[in-house]
Length: 617
Image (spheres, one colour):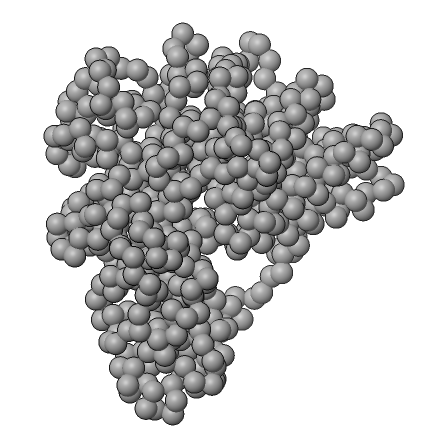
């Protein structure tokens, strides 16, 4: 060192970064630097997180991913060029699409923006395939999977008639020219959507909604965006051969939504279509796209004043709206119905993604029930924020409609997860958030206490089939009430989970009771033949219930309580069995179930050194 120069202190070395793909789940979710130390990394130790969870991640270099994408796009370009030909040209040219073309099509991943008839070409014999032959054979292959409207009996709305034709052989190429689908196919898809409308709402659309969908005049009926999203969901729920049409309607729905917002055309239709499109993306495990669409729908709903529909003005005094105020009670009911559909989609996606809400409870003033529009209401009866005020009657749900029960349970799930599951805080009197926590505890308890019986037949006479009878039992099980029961028990688990982790015996007992109640309800739905009608929203509940039961197994092992361990393991087997039955409706749930089975296998492998009770994983 030279005399007269200050001594330079060496810079502290940074914490070494773990190899890519080895970070724990918590650090990966929060985008923190993780050193990969097991059982708990240093970052989680500093943040006082519970024991880390490490999931295997098969990492592929970006070069290989880009190469796969290039090959996929090249195959799609080739197939699109083939699709532009007429069916006669395709059949005349060497028997249709080549075997290599079909193989390249089958290797393409789903949901990558496949255009027009790309995936339609792989549905028949790989040696000789054409669009015309595909549609010519569609009716014979799809008979057993078609909705009941094609069995010779008219639909409840009497719109279709008694045709025996399933999907007629098609001449032309409507899937590439932008023409509307044939009337018989459109009716099939609309009916498929109608039978599954309970996946979005229990305030089912009136007959006028389906009349507007069938109106051939796209400038006067429903907006093309709403039509195409309904067709898309009809393909998804129907499954089978019609699932091949999803890329066609997905492309059309995207283009129609852009057109609707560019010209501010029928914005209420745009909001409803965006909301349902968001749910479709979530069904396909495209969670980021789904949440973005749900948030977009919520923002436009706010801009249109749908969050302020309350008596006596019904939004007439809301300033700076994008749409004119509602002029009739039918318009008010439609907007109330659309608002709560958007509310459930946005709350559900935000909760699943652990992201902030677009609109706080205090700014929502729309009445819970669209049917309240016809009532004699002269004053505000409260909305979401009223759930947490004990002096109001919002938590007394004895006489609520099915959709009101659904929306209230979704609101409770979001708040309970935000206060309990996401923070891991055990609240005590005197804490800054204690009033909010205590109000949520009271709201969940009151709603659970006043929920109507699962055998109550309300709301089961209109709309899709949401009820069924158990063998040897004359009573009718109502899915529209079972679902809020399950969601409210899930909310209670989410709220008390942190306290249960801290060793609170009362909280642990409440969580275990709710977990077993959810399993009991799920089994009742299966016995009543309502497996296909179950909500995809039960997925988060499954994970919560599984974590509670896994913790009960570990507690029983440490206490050497063999009966408790056996009972909890039996409940876990029941839960996984129930979840597997839903894959017939939602094939994408296979990944969730695989993760559940992995958690159970890891639990059974813990024979000598059980995981501490401070972990749910």
